[in-house]
Image 1 (tube, rainbow, N blue to C red):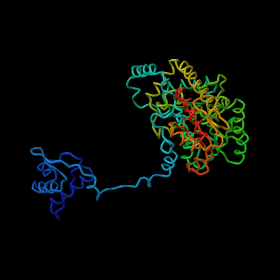
Image 2 (image 1 turned 180 degrees about the vertical axis):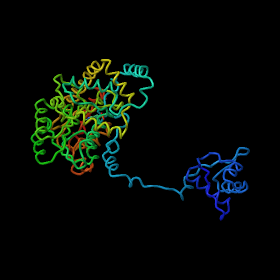
Image 3 (image 1 turned 90 degrees about the vertical axis):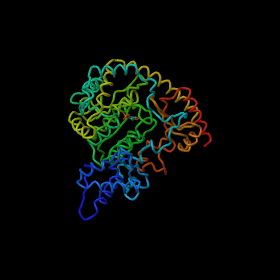
Image 4 (image 1 turned 90 degrees about the horizontal axis):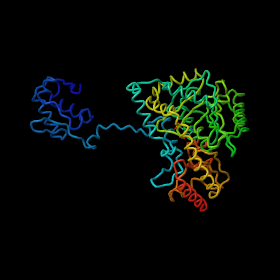
Length: 490
Ligand SMILES: Cc1ncc(COP(=O)(O)O)c(C=O)c1O
């Protein structure tokens, strides 16, 4: 109870009441403008004479801590910040936060990199173009779900995910050539949570993990936050360097490998069928499980799309496939999935439950309803045409205007450029002055995460990623020409 006064017989009662009320006001236990009990009420509540209460209130009023309104009663005054000083309790959180929080902040590129300002031509984002989203169909799905599933969908769901979506995705994975016997699916909050969960389930702090170098910056951050020893394998203009991969496996006790075979971020490369087979064979021979990031597979800009590594593995259980439609459809829904061995998914389910119980059932159900209505293929056709046009234009202009050693990209939403002896960060700051922004390539390299983005001797200093998914053709042209022009000034 708030008015739980401790009154002794040694000191004057009104002074004790005064000082205890004062403490309550300073510690905000009594909110500004809240009404104090009447003197009569408080007197009977704490068994102290009404006179003592009146004297205590008078003293508080003299000090400006309370005010009274005629015929209404006494009220707590709002404290001016300084008045609270003597009892302030300030913890220097910037020092007290954990090593985990410090790494998260240091590697948070949204906070630490140049930001987009309204009116700029931004090659920074690789998010899908929301103007392409089939919003009318989504509206129908929202209504369908709310009418058909009613209140149930708004109650707690299952950690593994919404059953109908899981079954849909199992058949979807089968259609990609994946054998789903003895495998199951866990729905996650996008790839990001799926990857974090996977690492927490199969690796311990200090374990070595292989990945392409460069690779997805968020993946690097998650590996770093989990305390893993990240072993990068160089990417050439032709994709991952297989000889180096074998050497690194020979020289390190590697526990897992993380790969993005389709429209790899940031290089935009699609790994060839032969390379996929070779990679799979090497990992199998060395008994190193594969974590495959299947994001962006749906883009399939070239018709000869290649099956995921998960398909090569047939009914083996060594590939953990993480799927996400984030670059295609509704990243704001934050839905992804992990397909893997049943027992492994079972363990992940418990971790997921302990972290966030489950991914929003309503969101999963809406996505399911939209996907099952069969319009997804139609939508994919439409976006492939649009993104293909942007890609073709971006790569053609980049080759023409930007001095480069090589430019990679097999389609998708971005291209990667190794400049001709030009510092990408210097170029970036010049371009920002001209209203154009892009992502400097160094943030995708394992070395940058190892040194927590210190700017000295940055690997990838001469590289950059141009994302064009949300730009008009006209802005792509304008932007690439500006970048090209600024290159000439360096
Ligand atoms: C390599 C890679 N995987 C997956 C994703 C999607 O992540 P999420 O599903 O968490 O949005 C991205 C997004 O940029 C990515 O670059």
